[in-house]
Amino acid sequence: MSGSYSRIVGTGAYLPAKILTNKDLERMVDTSDEWIYARTGIRQRHIAADEEQTSDLALAASRTALATAGIDAADLDLVVVATTTPDMVFPSTACILQAKLGARNCPAFDMQAVCSGFVYGLATADQFIRSGQYRNALVVGAEIYSRILDWNDRATCVLFGDGAGAVVLQRSNKPGIISSHLHADGAHVDMLSVPGTVSGGKVSGRPFVQMDGQSVFKFAVKVLDEVAKEALTANHIEKSEIDWLIPHQANIRIIQATARKLGISMEKVVATVDRHANTSAASIPLALDEAVRDGRIRAGQHVLLEGVGGGFTWGAVLVRW
Ligand code: UT7
Image (cartoon, rainbow, N blue to C red; front, side, top):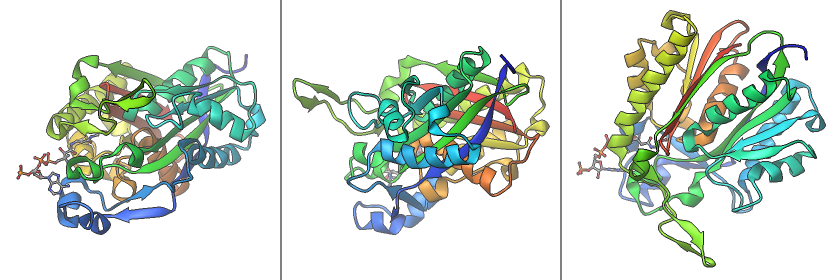
């Protein structure tokens, strides 16, 4: 085994072509561009075409990540797809993606941790690489939330969008991923959930996102602050040494409140929520890909990724780029 760390060696992103603006939503529910932008920072979201599945979004993002990494799908040892909106009950979206990519025979599984799914997936793939078991892993966050939204409920339908982001993780002699910190507390199911299930040949329960927005907001800021500090303390790193904070992109006010609590300037925060709304497990890799491609993230910098979502789940991954 050469090297006992993993590094992100390629990133990719995909957003469906159709854009739904706040103005479009004004014609669908009793809302306004002013309200949505002021409360959330969102201007628009992308919506998957009827014929697109989550695995298709994942495929587009993955192909770019593989091309950037300079490896073939056949070289992958592991495929992890973080999603809450799988193509079907089973097989996993990861297995469907693996076949579409032509990455036959490597293990593939879905990671269900809602908006923390990408951080959970990255942490898991990192462990497989660190242990020496695998060399190349593909970690994807891909979602079609537009299919689990009640488009008559203005309290939720304005907040979410569709998209996918992917990274290729590769074994390396130096970090790479410095540490990961994962948490869950299943006592808060009622705060954020899609309470429907498939049973007896039909959907039972309400298969749409429901949440207590204000409670989610407070909980998110609290744990994003805590887990970021946990990552810094564990590595004896000062907040001034964080070059880029990439939090889950749910609401710009959650992002601003978290940065304020941490004492990190918004100039060091990557925010893309204005253009794609909350894409759940896809939001962190979408923001990461943008900041890598536009040259903000450079070699040697510290990047802190952190997510929070239904479950509740939350976690952080500290990376040296
Ligand atoms: O990945 C995690 C997923 N969830 C989240 O990120 C959600 C976290 N929570 C939030 O982002 C915020 O709580 C919201 C954006 C959902 C709401 O913002 P808020 O500042 O907490 O507003 P609020 O819930 O206090 O609602 C204020 C008012 C209410 O009217 P009344 O009762 O004051 O008359 C709502 O009925 O805004 C009303 N409202 C809307 N008005 C126009 C709720 N949704 C809308 C809407 N357009 N889309």
